[in-house]
Image (cartoon, rainbow, N blue to C red; front, side):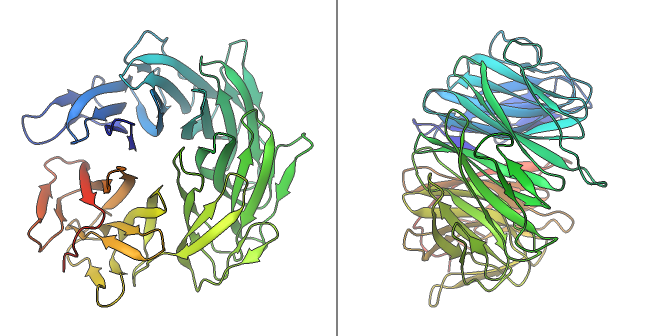
Length: 453
């Protein structure tokens, strides 16, 4: 989910059969290829009402990423069949024998401008997209077991080889690429290693750095064959560390740092906005994690989740410990606005705030509850909104959080069965899933809302 300059919202997802945008009688979209899935892009007004939809139409696709900046929108999908992006006359993106990534760039009025084809003999998919200051698009993806070809069979085609992987498992390499505002491919670089290599996000910071955050095991090499080539190994042998790296807009690696400190997996989830110079990263931290260069150890009793700020120049700012419960807390989404920090995820038990405003919640009916939290610019805990699920078999989770720039916060929650928003309060709202598949709730909160207590 992303917010446009006019306050409207864009969301992406997967259409599995039929989708209704609101209560019974609201607009409905039906799958054109029964038994498969299609990717879907929706545009909502500032009150959440549907304006229009676009599909990645074909027998096998789902949405993977999106970014909005000014009058441009980039939408990425994962597909196993030929796909036609609605809204224009761009050619169909073909399947290449395996599972592939692709993306389309639109004007925010829904007009399709161009599409990007990415091919791999075995498996590749798109992780994230970011739009730059000149309308260019930066695509971050992964590929496995064979090389990846970007813009295949075009004059600007670029092929990246797969690294020699250790045996066992589906191990990926990464690509980072720039596509100019007219859709031509400008450059592509591999991020590779013999073991586990993965990433969560790409962002354009200060209109001068393309920043990727991710995770690796064994060793990982960036900018191979260039003077700025950098290779990392985990701080602890056999461990998994996180990394952040920044490229110039013309594809030169400017800096790269890692963090870690134990065999515990350091899994990053990034929140980023073009007009905010410091991205916040949520990750599972080890005890006394190490960040930056020179390495600095931060005292965090763990394992815990933490939020870390990186500037466009790779400097490490504040490291915040995030709330956790007696059951594991999993953070899956983040956003920032003028120093405010929001996080979304899932948990079984949560305690948030400080006395006398401390709030505790435990899932009494379902497996786990969605989690939506905010912190103020000074680091103090601001708001926790109780949301309860009664599904005993599946996690209900907040998968996106977006500040609206007007003192509020949007969140989407994926759930089965019944969802209670602000249960036990005068604002309690009950949403019931009426289909065999998951539903998505779109929620809008006020940042400094009174405590539900």
